[in-house]
Image 1 (cartoon, chains in turn cyan, green):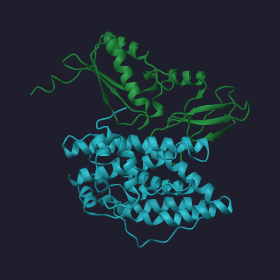
Image 2: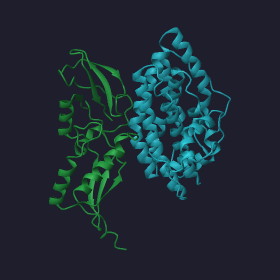
Image 3: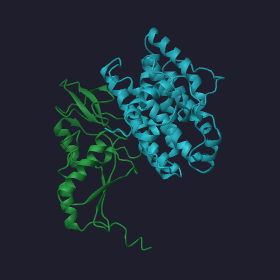
Image 4: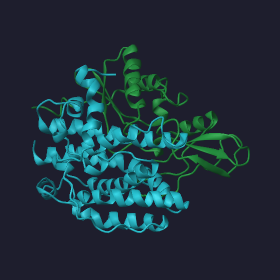
Length: 249
Length: 173
């Protein structure tokens, strides 16, 4: 696959894996409203993932459709960011993961609407309003939990400390990123960090939570090297299709 | 290669009027009081040189399950009326709640769903205000948000502080 195709696949996989994670909350969230909220965010991300997977398949030109790409690739062929495959944990863990992600995705879509890839620009344009809504939801909860009870503040602070190290990968440029940036297809990841940090700082300040320091850890999910959690997620997500190839709803 | 001559063309007025009559009867599967025309998702109607009708349809929310149903219902209604039709997805510019027809807004309110309160214009504004103008039942402007998400991606849940009735709000996007 070309760098262009790989880049689109990274975005598709990141959305798909996070949608699957959020789907795990259905029927388990602490309140009906949050059950609906997390499921709706999941649905938006899944819809965007389907468009992106189809686009990646057509860029590849080997006839793979969205289902083949979603259900028949191995763990090492998945190119999602490591952050989104992290387990749901408690509601606070999920909200922190979501807020870190939403602030990144909103900034990315803001830039991608200018992409020379018309399909990518259209998906970003469509996703921008959805992403804004997700960010309002996740930031709202992060502020409430951080500026909440001593218990909620302590727990969400721990979530933040645990998940922050995965954010380095969001802004780490590699060869694929440099190629698509040079072609005017996407912004360089490193160029999105400043605006992201400003958005996170604003939310963290209102949540009365200190921003964790930079981490020395590096993650390479977008190059196919994952944490131990992705394999289990894929096994569950892919089992039906692999048992019944070609199955559709 | 004469591509210009083979480009799809707008249907003649009498056909267009008939098509609009058919589409006005195709209901949104989740908010059946709205037709697909009220919802603003039909983007173009074009006749291809082979006589096939091309319907451009925009998804509302990227992942809304109603998108597939809307597409199937539109094609079924057109085929039932004798039109050979295909649907194409139109992603850009993205569908916006601004495209609800004035008639659609009236129908929503009469149905008990508060219509979008603001024009969105560009969706890039992150912290824009988004709350219903008034309770669709008693008209009070004092309302409280119960949940940012509702039974479908396009709605949020509110409660009226005056008559205490809960109601759906069609979000601005």
